[in-house]
Image 1 (spheres, rainbow, N blue to C red):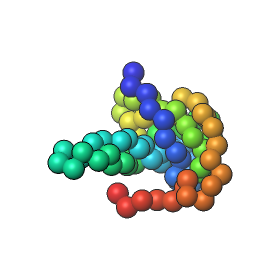
Image 2: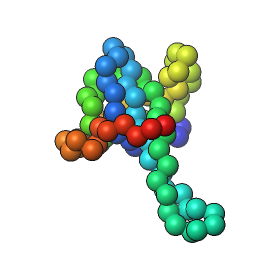
Image 3: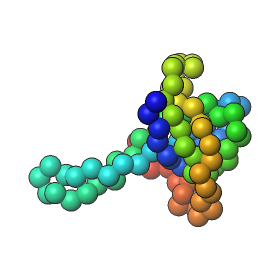
Length: 88
């Protein structure tokens, strides 16, 4: 299965969290690296909180929007900019 790590940006639902994934891609013309952000919903049985660094894996569709599952907590980022939501 595909596995990624990301930061929990929203944990107000009962069994789901919103996780922000970041990846670095090179600009095709300028050759500078840009951070691309993607927000995904993941099923959370561990009860993560906002700001947690979690490992998620791709799974079968669990609901209308949930296609990922939280595997484990990797760490915790207590800084305020860890939870800020960038425009999608």
